[in-house]
Length: 92
Image (cartoon, rainbow, N blue to C red; front, side, top):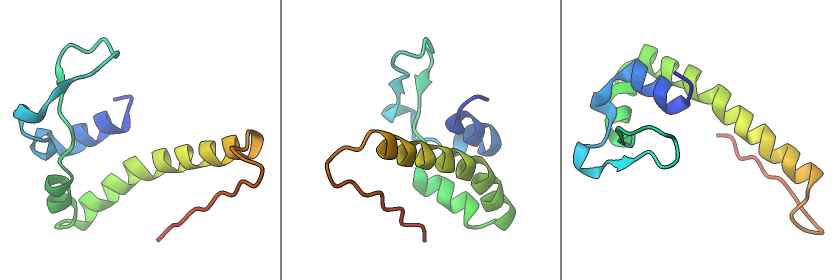
């Protein structure tokens, strides 16, 4: 799997996806099969009931989130969006 989505679905299965009625085609990816969104409520039921599954989800998502966060911070530092730019990171 190349994406966070693919890793999460590979780890937790199709049961965490929205029902097929809410699916849309993966635009511009060359992927002809429908792309079903992760149902956050279903995923939450799985990972909050099992600490090991929650750790697996965190191991998949945290590096990806960190990478996006640092890219955005760097981009704002190199190409500020305004005369007085600030980056605020709120991490619970």
